[in-house]
Length: 179
Image (cartoon, rainbow, N blue to C red):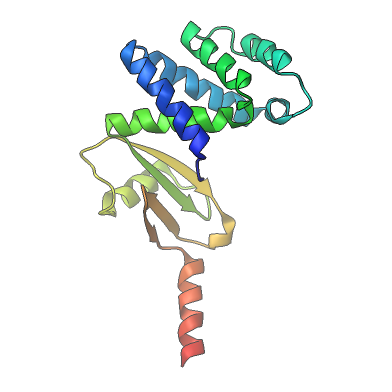
């Protein structure tokens, strides 16, 4: 997913502030909660995306939904809504998480497969790959895409290994067309 410049700038500003005030870890957890809450609630997504709803009402609802958060996060939510960027809230929170993980050296790995893989299979795939730095911690996100037919696609950062049946069939088809 491409992240907008807006999300990157707000996330960087929040990261700078939390580092100065030594609150990065607390805000990191709260940003994770924001991402999960918005992902799970289509109504909340639509609410924040709506241009019709008044920003004061959005601010009040946001404070109610996230009432157990720290003052820093509550103030940040108010700022985002005041600036009219509430439709980017999930992206901003995710970008903040990404920046903190990058700072801590966490690798983000995406493993796409045609069916659900067992933990043992995931571990074997990661061990067999040169892309994964086993000396660092990593966060694995599993995605199921039945269109792959079989195999997997492993993505680490901006590098990718495609071992899917779909891509192999596609390559085979191209070879037959050339010959």
